Length: 77
Image 1: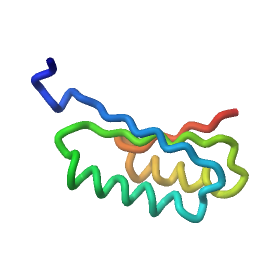
Image 2: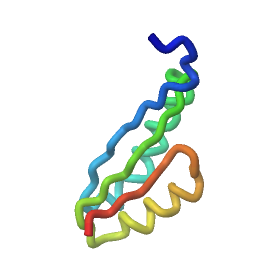
Image 3: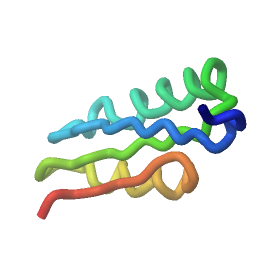
């Protein structure tokens, strides 16, 4: 049993495909929920792009810059 909850990492995979209209808002909603309810754990959101051809990558990269320890962007090649 792990006694120090700060060592627990919760990883959230967020699969996306052409989500330019909703991605920023939804990631911010998730981060707000995490800050209010899951603050005792380290949480990371992995935005997993399945080949978007809209501005999903650009938005994801901005989220990565704004939340460098919480948001990670991965695009399937």
